[in-house]
Amino acid sequence: MNITRTELGSTLRRLRLARGLTLADIAYAAGTDPANISRLERGMQGYSDQLLTAIADLFGMRMWELFKEAEGRPVHQVREEHGHYGAVPAKQLQLVSQRYVHASPAARRLIDRTVKLAASGKLSDQAAASLLTLLRSLSKTAAKKPKSKKGKRKPR
Image (cartoon, rainbow, N blue to C red; front, side):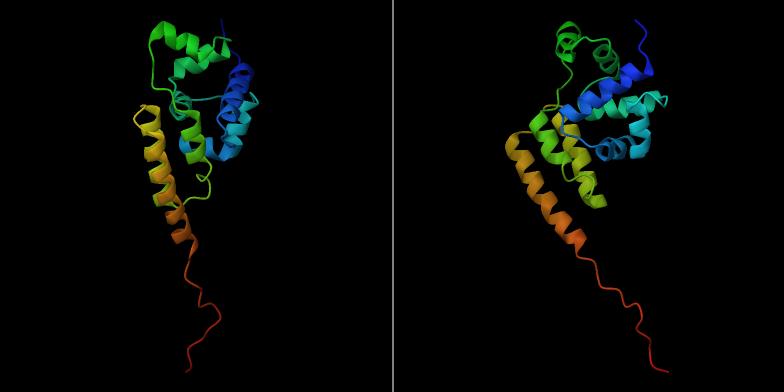
């Protein structure tokens, strides 16, 4: 079965929404911009293997599983047939992704690593909670920027 851009796009949107992710979450993880992800979801833009691989990784899937999902075959059925590929626990991924868009670069690196651990099944709920506590402190630290000295002139 050939998958159209629209079918693949609507599948990506359904998977994204089911995980509580925003366009910005997907875009950052895939190294693109939210408008590109929106066009992809609406079937108005093509995709590269690199882009789909990045999106599939975020969903805890392989790229071919995205296509099987678009064909109407649930991922759990495909995984039973082809072997398990570390499902991302939805609760963990949702907790981590909620702060992704507004996070500092250090916090984003932490989130990237957390998502990879979750995808591999090596992240417990307790570890996710600890990482979120650390993430909150990093976000607060990044929000405290020094005040600008704009407008102050040195006397001559």
